[in-house]
Amino acid sequence: MEVIIRPTTKEAVNLTAKLIAEAINQKPFFKLGLATGATMEAVYADLVAMNQAKEVDFSLVHTFNLDEYIGLDPEDPNSYRYYMNKHLFSKINIDMRNTNLPNGLAEDEIAEGLRYESAIAAAGGIDLQLLGIGNDGHIGFNEPISSLAGRTRSKALTPATYAQNSVYFTPPESMPKRAFTMGVGTILGAERIVMLITGAKKAEIAAKAIEGPVTSMVTGSALQMHPRTVVVLDEAAAANLTQKDYYNWVFANEPEWKPYR
Ligand code: PGA
Image (tube, rainbow, N blue to C red; front, side):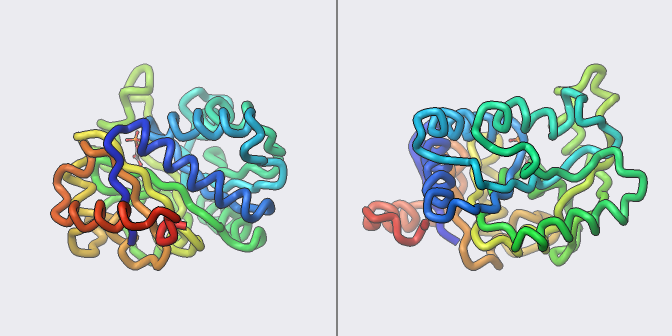
């Protein structure tokens, strides 16, 4: 794992978008794993701006999102399909047929998990997976005690996730209590992973995921098992890291960014 700490949220976001754009430019038939949530909106704004400036081309990119709420129609403003169309897909030169999310309306949940796994495998696997982290340490919707070898399936959400996300729903109780999510095993199958963590509220969970023991109680900690993961944090989210000096020393001594590419 490589850890990059940037002084501001804006700089952390810019660097995350730059790592993604650079990877796509190296391999145009790119399979990009995507995340949703408040943290990612700024990353997508950056990628849209870079696409409009012709600094990154999405015309041959295929995308696979981590998760989708069970029971929400793609047209529902709270669905992750809607979020992705709004913040990214409708504003870049991507072929919508190449954008994938689990189908929140699938009747057979087991079959939907298998279908999604097959689609990722048929595409040749994910080249780079973008991740945030939940207040309860989840990646995707892999809540505490999710199998660290799990694949795409339905998952019951925790009260912590419900509290974090129900603010976007009107009324808040209309938020689904279950979601489809890639498993931790699916995520660890990506060639590269870039995780972005910003804000003081995430400082405690960031330290657990990065420097704590690998445990299904904090599924983000499973990234310690992945050979090519970069975690980008702003100063506020990095506040509880004990090895900050080491991370900053590595970054300062790598003008070519080799460890992060
Ligand atoms: P957030 O969500 O960006 O809205 O904090 C992250 C997550 O739950 O993975």
